[in-house]
Image (tube, rainbow, N blue to C red; front, top):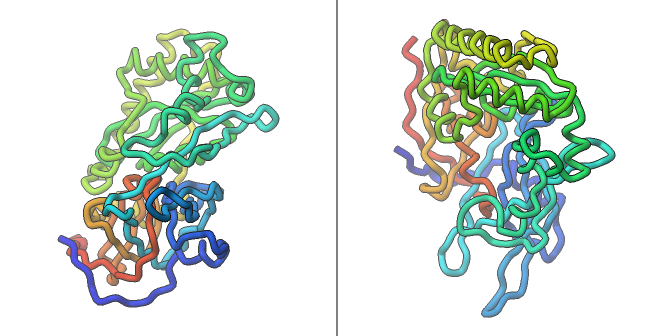
Length: 353
Protein backbone atom coordinates (compact mmCIF):
# COMPACT_ATOMS: atom_id res chain seq x y z
CA UNK A 1 0.00 0.00 0.00
CA UNK A 2 1.33 3.45 -0.86
CA UNK A 3 0.17 6.93 -0.06
CA UNK A 4 1.88 10.28 0.25
CA UNK A 5 2.80 12.35 3.27
CA UNK A 6 2.68 16.12 3.38
CA UNK A 7 5.13 17.74 1.04
CA UNK A 8 8.54 18.47 2.53
CA UNK A 9 11.51 20.03 0.80
CA UNK A 10 14.69 17.97 0.77
CA UNK A 11 17.76 18.50 -1.41
CA UNK A 12 16.91 16.32 -4.42
CA UNK A 13 19.46 14.31 -6.43
CA UNK A 14 17.67 15.34 -9.61
CA UNK A 15 18.09 19.04 -8.88
CA UNK A 16 21.87 18.75 -9.20
CA UNK A 17 21.39 18.29 -12.95
CA UNK A 18 19.64 21.65 -13.24
CA UNK A 19 22.42 23.33 -11.28
CA UNK A 20 24.69 22.37 -14.19
CA UNK A 21 22.19 22.54 -17.03
CA UNK A 22 20.69 26.03 -16.83
CA UNK A 23 20.32 26.93 -20.49
CA UNK A 24 17.12 28.80 -21.24
CA UNK A 25 15.99 26.22 -23.77
CA UNK A 26 16.08 23.42 -21.18
CA UNK A 27 12.79 22.32 -19.66
CA UNK A 28 12.65 21.36 -15.97
CA UNK A 29 12.49 17.67 -16.85
CA UNK A 30 14.85 14.77 -17.51
CA UNK A 31 14.92 11.46 -19.31
CA UNK A 32 15.72 8.71 -16.83
CA UNK A 33 18.19 6.57 -18.77
CA UNK A 34 19.29 4.06 -16.12
CA UNK A 35 21.32 3.25 -13.03
CA UNK A 36 24.82 2.35 -14.15
CA UNK A 37 27.98 1.34 -12.29
CA UNK A 38 31.38 2.97 -12.47
CA UNK A 39 34.34 2.14 -10.25
CA UNK A 40 32.06 -0.07 -8.12
CA UNK A 41 29.63 2.79 -7.41
CA UNK A 42 26.07 3.38 -8.68
CA UNK A 43 25.25 6.48 -10.70
CA UNK A 44 22.02 7.83 -12.17
CA UNK A 45 22.28 8.47 -15.92
CA UNK A 46 19.97 11.39 -16.67
CA UNK A 47 19.43 13.39 -19.84
CA UNK A 48 17.92 16.88 -19.72
CA UNK A 49 15.28 17.64 -22.32
CA UNK A 50 15.02 20.82 -24.36
CA UNK A 51 12.02 22.72 -25.60
CA UNK A 52 11.10 22.26 -29.25
CA UNK A 53 8.50 23.90 -31.45
CA UNK A 54 5.84 21.52 -32.69
CA UNK A 55 2.62 21.89 -34.59
CA UNK A 56 0.04 23.14 -32.17
CA UNK A 57 2.50 24.24 -29.47
CA UNK A 58 5.74 23.48 -27.68
CA UNK A 59 7.03 19.98 -27.02
CA UNK A 60 10.25 18.54 -25.65
CA UNK A 61 13.06 16.47 -27.12
CA UNK A 62 16.26 14.84 -25.76
CA UNK A 63 19.20 17.22 -25.41
CA UNK A 64 21.74 14.48 -26.22
CA UNK A 65 23.76 15.45 -23.13
CA UNK A 66 23.60 12.50 -20.73
CA UNK A 67 24.89 13.29 -17.23
CA UNK A 68 25.86 11.07 -14.30
CA UNK A 69 24.85 11.71 -10.69
CA UNK A 70 26.36 9.54 -7.92
CA UNK A 71 23.84 7.76 -5.69
CA UNK A 72 25.05 8.92 -2.29
CA UNK A 73 23.76 7.12 0.83
CA UNK A 74 21.11 9.17 2.60
CA UNK A 75 20.36 11.36 -0.41
CA UNK A 76 16.73 12.14 -1.19
CA UNK A 77 15.39 11.21 -4.61
CA UNK A 78 11.94 12.47 -5.51
CA UNK A 79 10.37 12.26 -8.95
CA UNK A 80 7.14 12.17 -10.86
CA UNK A 81 6.54 10.91 -14.38
CA UNK A 82 6.04 13.85 -16.73
CA UNK A 83 2.98 13.83 -18.97
CA UNK A 84 2.53 15.45 -22.37
CA UNK A 85 -0.26 17.83 -23.28
CA UNK A 86 -2.69 14.95 -23.79
CA UNK A 87 -1.92 13.30 -20.46
CA UNK A 88 0.30 10.50 -21.79
CA UNK A 89 3.65 9.33 -20.48
CA UNK A 90 6.67 10.32 -22.56
CA UNK A 91 9.37 7.83 -23.52
CA UNK A 92 12.32 8.37 -25.85
CA UNK A 93 14.65 6.08 -27.79
CA UNK A 94 17.78 4.91 -25.96
CA UNK A 95 19.98 5.25 -29.04
CA UNK A 96 22.37 2.55 -30.21
CA UNK A 97 25.80 1.07 -29.41
CA UNK A 98 28.94 0.87 -31.49
CA UNK A 99 32.50 -0.30 -30.97
CA UNK A 100 35.50 2.02 -30.79
CA UNK A 101 38.38 0.75 -32.96
CA UNK A 102 41.00 2.57 -30.88
CA UNK A 103 39.93 1.65 -27.34
CA UNK A 104 38.10 -1.62 -27.98
CA UNK A 105 35.26 -0.37 -25.82
CA UNK A 106 31.54 0.07 -26.42
CA UNK A 107 30.08 3.52 -26.94
CA UNK A 108 26.46 4.60 -26.75
CA UNK A 109 25.27 6.95 -29.48
CA UNK A 110 22.23 9.15 -28.95
CA UNK A 111 19.28 8.61 -31.26
CA UNK A 112 19.95 11.08 -34.11
CA UNK A 113 16.23 11.84 -34.49
CA UNK A 114 15.46 11.91 -30.76
CA UNK A 115 12.51 9.65 -31.52
CA UNK A 116 9.68 9.15 -29.09
CA UNK A 117 8.62 5.56 -28.35
CA UNK A 118 5.36 3.86 -27.57
CA UNK A 119 7.13 0.75 -26.28
CA UNK A 120 10.52 -0.96 -26.24
CA UNK A 121 13.94 0.69 -25.96
CA UNK A 122 14.92 1.64 -29.51
CA UNK A 123 13.33 3.13 -32.59
CA UNK A 124 13.65 1.22 -35.87
CA UNK A 125 16.63 3.30 -37.01
CA UNK A 126 18.67 2.71 -33.84
CA UNK A 127 17.78 -0.99 -33.68
CA UNK A 128 19.05 -1.37 -37.25
CA UNK A 129 22.30 0.49 -36.48
CA UNK A 130 23.10 -1.21 -33.16
CA UNK A 131 26.46 -2.95 -33.57
CA UNK A 132 26.50 -4.90 -30.30
CA UNK A 133 23.56 -7.12 -31.28
CA UNK A 134 25.65 -8.97 -33.88
CA UNK A 135 28.22 -9.98 -31.26
CA UNK A 136 25.84 -12.53 -29.74
CA UNK A 137 25.95 -14.65 -32.91
CA UNK A 138 29.29 -13.55 -34.44
CA UNK A 139 30.90 -16.88 -33.48
CA UNK A 140 28.30 -18.59 -35.68
CA UNK A 141 28.34 -16.17 -38.62
CA UNK A 142 31.79 -15.00 -39.69
CA UNK A 143 32.21 -11.48 -41.03
CA UNK A 144 29.19 -9.95 -39.34
CA UNK A 145 31.08 -7.60 -37.01
CA UNK A 146 31.97 -3.98 -37.73
CA UNK A 147 35.64 -2.95 -37.24
CA UNK A 148 34.76 -1.39 -33.89
CA UNK A 149 33.07 -4.53 -32.64
CA UNK A 150 35.95 -6.67 -33.90
CA UNK A 151 38.28 -4.54 -31.74
CA UNK A 152 35.98 -5.20 -28.78
CA UNK A 153 35.78 -8.92 -29.52
CA UNK A 154 39.56 -9.31 -29.80
CA UNK A 155 40.21 -8.51 -26.15
CA UNK A 156 40.20 -11.22 -23.43
CA UNK A 157 36.78 -12.22 -22.12
CA UNK A 158 35.61 -14.14 -19.09
CA UNK A 159 32.80 -16.64 -18.54
CA UNK A 160 30.86 -16.48 -15.29
CA UNK A 161 28.05 -18.19 -13.44
CA UNK A 162 25.74 -15.79 -11.64
CA UNK A 163 23.19 -16.93 -9.07
CA UNK A 164 20.27 -14.79 -7.94
CA UNK A 165 18.63 -14.66 -4.48
CA UNK A 166 15.93 -17.18 -5.49
CA UNK A 167 18.59 -19.81 -6.34
CA UNK A 168 18.26 -19.52 -10.13
CA UNK A 169 21.43 -19.06 -12.17
CA UNK A 170 22.62 -17.88 -15.57
CA UNK A 171 25.83 -18.08 -17.56
CA UNK A 172 27.27 -14.88 -18.97
CA UNK A 173 30.34 -13.16 -20.37
CA UNK A 174 32.31 -10.01 -19.64
CA UNK A 175 35.18 -8.30 -21.42
CA UNK A 176 38.35 -7.23 -19.64
CA UNK A 177 37.03 -3.64 -19.70
CA UNK A 178 33.71 -4.61 -18.10
CA UNK A 179 35.07 -6.77 -15.25
CA UNK A 180 33.69 -6.52 -12.55
CA UNK A 181 31.22 -3.88 -13.75
CA UNK A 182 29.26 -6.38 -15.81
CA UNK A 183 28.36 -8.35 -12.70
CA UNK A 184 27.76 -5.19 -10.68
CA UNK A 185 25.04 -4.40 -13.23
CA UNK A 186 23.37 -7.81 -12.98
CA UNK A 187 21.94 -7.64 -9.42
CA UNK A 188 23.33 -11.08 -8.58
CA UNK A 189 23.48 -12.68 -5.15
CA UNK A 190 26.76 -14.41 -5.86
CA UNK A 191 28.91 -15.14 -8.90
CA UNK A 192 32.04 -17.03 -9.95
CA UNK A 193 34.28 -16.53 -12.97
CA UNK A 194 34.89 -20.03 -14.36
CA UNK A 195 37.00 -19.48 -17.50
CA UNK A 196 38.87 -16.94 -19.57
CA UNK A 197 39.32 -16.85 -23.35
CA UNK A 198 41.69 -14.77 -25.48
CA UNK A 199 38.74 -13.24 -27.35
CA UNK A 200 35.01 -12.69 -27.24
CA UNK A 201 34.12 -15.18 -29.98
CA UNK A 202 35.60 -18.19 -28.22
CA UNK A 203 34.01 -17.18 -24.93
CA UNK A 204 30.60 -17.14 -26.62
CA UNK A 205 31.21 -20.63 -27.96
CA UNK A 206 31.88 -21.65 -24.38
CA UNK A 207 28.75 -19.85 -23.19
CA UNK A 208 26.62 -21.69 -25.76
CA UNK A 209 28.20 -25.02 -24.75
CA UNK A 210 27.31 -24.47 -21.10
CA UNK A 211 23.74 -23.66 -22.07
CA UNK A 212 23.45 -26.62 -24.46
CA UNK A 213 25.07 -29.27 -22.26
CA UNK A 214 24.24 -28.10 -18.71
CA UNK A 215 20.93 -26.41 -19.56
CA UNK A 216 22.00 -23.19 -17.82
CA UNK A 217 20.21 -20.19 -19.38
CA UNK A 218 21.90 -17.00 -20.58
CA UNK A 219 19.13 -14.60 -19.62
CA UNK A 220 17.10 -13.76 -16.53
CA UNK A 221 14.43 -11.13 -16.97
CA UNK A 222 14.52 -7.99 -14.81
CA UNK A 223 11.09 -8.65 -13.29
CA UNK A 224 12.22 -12.12 -12.24
CA UNK A 225 15.42 -10.69 -10.71
CA UNK A 226 13.35 -8.21 -8.75
CA UNK A 227 11.07 -10.93 -7.32
CA UNK A 228 14.17 -12.93 -6.39
CA UNK A 229 15.45 -10.09 -4.21
CA UNK A 230 12.18 -9.68 -2.35
CA UNK A 231 11.77 -13.48 -1.84
CA UNK A 232 15.33 -14.81 -1.28
CA UNK A 233 16.32 -18.34 -0.31
CA UNK A 234 18.08 -18.99 3.01
CA UNK A 235 21.82 -18.40 2.70
CA UNK A 236 22.88 -22.07 2.91
CA UNK A 237 20.49 -23.10 0.12
CA UNK A 238 21.64 -20.17 -2.01
CA UNK A 239 25.32 -21.08 -1.68
CA UNK A 240 24.58 -24.74 -2.42
CA UNK A 241 22.57 -23.85 -5.54
CA UNK A 242 25.41 -21.68 -6.81
CA UNK A 243 28.11 -24.27 -6.19
CA UNK A 244 26.09 -26.99 -7.91
CA UNK A 245 25.61 -24.78 -10.98
CA UNK A 246 29.32 -23.90 -11.11
CA UNK A 247 30.20 -27.61 -11.03
CA UNK A 248 27.73 -28.39 -13.82
CA UNK A 249 29.20 -25.58 -15.93
CA UNK A 250 32.77 -26.87 -15.44
CA UNK A 251 31.64 -30.36 -16.45
CA UNK A 252 29.96 -28.94 -19.55
CA UNK A 253 33.13 -27.12 -20.61
CA UNK A 254 35.13 -30.32 -20.18
CA UNK A 255 32.61 -32.33 -22.19
CA UNK A 256 32.56 -29.72 -24.96
CA UNK A 257 36.32 -30.00 -25.47
CA UNK A 258 36.66 -26.23 -25.32
CA UNK A 259 38.43 -26.23 -21.98
CA UNK A 260 41.74 -26.96 -23.72
CA UNK A 261 41.49 -23.54 -25.39
CA UNK A 262 40.49 -21.70 -22.22
CA UNK A 263 42.09 -20.77 -18.94
CA UNK A 264 40.05 -22.41 -16.18
CA UNK A 265 39.14 -20.04 -13.34
CA UNK A 266 37.56 -20.35 -9.92
CA UNK A 267 37.40 -16.70 -8.91
CA UNK A 268 34.60 -15.25 -6.83
CA UNK A 269 33.04 -11.93 -7.66
CA UNK A 270 32.99 -9.74 -4.54
CA UNK A 271 30.09 -7.29 -4.05
CA UNK A 272 30.89 -3.59 -3.80
CA UNK A 273 30.50 -1.81 -0.46
CA UNK A 274 27.79 0.22 -2.19
CA UNK A 275 25.74 -3.00 -2.19
CA UNK A 276 25.93 -3.54 1.59
CA UNK A 277 22.27 -2.73 2.27
CA UNK A 278 20.71 -5.08 -0.28
CA UNK A 279 23.14 -7.86 0.66
CA UNK A 280 22.13 -7.53 4.31
CA UNK A 281 18.87 -9.17 3.20
CA UNK A 282 20.84 -12.30 2.26
CA UNK A 283 22.64 -12.83 5.58
CA UNK A 284 22.47 -16.36 6.95
CA UNK A 285 22.00 -14.96 10.45
CA UNK A 286 19.75 -11.99 11.26
CA UNK A 287 18.75 -11.11 7.69
CA UNK A 288 17.39 -7.63 7.11
CA UNK A 289 14.53 -8.19 4.64
CA UNK A 290 13.61 -5.91 1.77
CA UNK A 291 10.02 -5.03 0.90
CA UNK A 292 8.87 -4.48 -2.66
CA UNK A 293 8.24 -0.82 -3.49
CA UNK A 294 5.10 -0.11 -5.52
CA UNK A 295 5.65 0.26 -9.25
CA UNK A 296 6.41 3.91 -10.02
CA UNK A 297 4.91 3.44 -13.49
CA UNK A 298 1.61 2.84 -11.69
CA UNK A 299 1.85 5.37 -8.85
CA UNK A 300 3.41 7.99 -11.20
CA UNK A 301 5.29 9.59 -8.27
CA UNK A 302 7.78 8.53 -5.61
CA UNK A 303 10.12 9.99 -3.01
CA UNK A 304 12.64 8.14 -0.82
CA UNK A 305 16.06 8.24 0.83
CA UNK A 306 18.71 6.16 -0.98
CA UNK A 307 20.69 3.56 0.96
CA UNK A 308 22.37 1.47 -1.73
CA UNK A 309 21.89 -0.48 -4.92
CA UNK A 310 22.21 -3.86 -6.60
CA UNK A 311 22.27 -3.69 -10.37
CA UNK A 312 19.45 -1.37 -11.42
CA UNK A 313 17.56 -1.89 -8.16
CA UNK A 314 17.89 0.75 -5.45
CA UNK A 315 17.43 0.21 -1.73
CA UNK A 316 15.80 3.03 0.19
CA UNK A 317 13.69 4.03 3.16
CA UNK A 318 10.87 6.53 3.59
CA UNK A 319 11.72 7.75 7.07
CA UNK A 320 12.63 4.63 9.06
CA UNK A 321 16.11 3.36 8.09
CA UNK A 322 15.30 -0.07 9.57
CA UNK A 323 12.34 -0.53 7.20
CA UNK A 324 14.01 -0.97 3.82
CA UNK A 325 12.35 -1.10 0.42
CA UNK A 326 13.68 -2.24 -2.95
CA UNK A 327 12.88 -0.07 -5.97
CA UNK A 328 12.91 -1.38 -9.52
CA UNK A 329 14.30 1.63 -11.36
CA UNK A 330 14.71 -0.42 -14.56
CA UNK A 331 11.03 0.18 -15.30
CA UNK A 332 11.74 3.93 -15.54
CA UNK A 333 14.30 3.54 -18.34
CA UNK A 334 13.87 6.20 -21.06
CA UNK A 335 10.79 7.84 -19.49
CA UNK A 336 10.65 11.58 -18.86
CA UNK A 337 10.57 12.52 -15.17
CA UNK A 338 10.64 15.76 -13.23
CA UNK A 339 11.77 16.48 -9.67
CA UNK A 340 9.18 16.14 -6.92
CA UNK A 341 9.42 16.85 -3.21
CA UNK A 342 6.88 14.33 -1.89
CA UNK A 343 8.09 11.58 0.44
CA UNK A 344 6.24 8.31 -0.25
CA UNK A 345 4.33 6.66 2.57
CA UNK A 346 4.78 2.90 2.20
CA UNK A 347 3.72 0.17 4.63
CA UNK A 348 6.70 -2.15 5.17
CA UNK A 349 7.61 -5.00 7.50
CA UNK A 350 10.69 -4.96 9.68
CA UNK A 351 12.74 -8.05 10.46
CA UNK A 352 11.35 -10.47 13.03
CA UNK A 353 14.73 -12.08 13.65
